[in-house]
Length: 332
Ligand code: TYM
Image 1 (cartoon, rainbow, N blue to C red):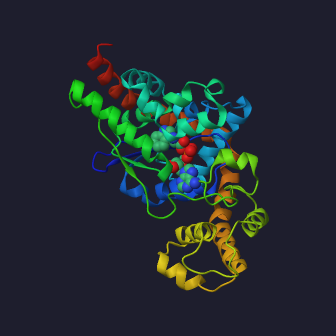
Image 2: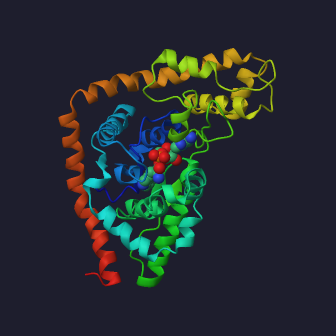
């Protein structure tokens, strides 16, 4: 699991519902593509998921689903893939970070501001505020150097660096300060129904046309794309509006093309041609993942055993960092 010659990567996704193509193109796909370059740890962050209300049975199901999707997407079984709550050091280190974090830092986080604006401070749990401290613990417990994520996580990684540096300044260099790895293509896929907003699981709950989910059947993918918002123009023109740009961004990320190439390919074409090319591309990528996903989910016992085994192997690694911090602070 530990290969000191390769830099360590840590990343995670919340098992808070179906994954959409933003999660795939912004995160998982890059993990898969670059996995041989790094010493990887991929986490299913169930403790983060409970910052919002979760049905217990659905949370268990989503946790296994997420593990199956990691593997079905091409994460090799020998990579360390585990469930966050199986390694108790995450919650323990998060507590220490919370105690060293000014409340103002957390209140300034975009995610916290969005949630409180939408729901009000009385209706969301304190975990939404302290969420970044747990994420910082996830990353720094394993001395990860790189964190491959989508654009929306940049601020959380900046916080991770800030709290890490604060502890290091006070107690000597006991934590490795990580860097985000954010790709140019696919880092911020927008909603199909509203290209001003990031594609997100929570917005998809209110609007079925918002997101394409990784397990959506092909006809539904075509239907959602056919309804995706475009411009008032009769055909693709550049500079394109946000809806068309988003469709082209999905296409170019999947096909690994640069902007001039997609502009050449679609300039003057009707929107229907663009939408059906995007649908073909998305279906081509997702169909084999869906097939493998079903195979993997047909043996949950094996999947859970793999997840438990990884957590057991990671526990001493995580504890070493936790103990270093606890000693520095005077807890040991
Ligand atoms: P989560 O579960 O919201 O999203 C998982 C990953 O998907 C990326 N992503 C997107 N990328 C492109 N376009 C989009 N519309 C889009 N929506 C989501 C996210 O950037 C992320 O990479 N806080 C994290 C989970 C986490 C974590 C960590 C990540 C917990 N601990 C430690 C890295 C390291 C989150 O909520 O991701």
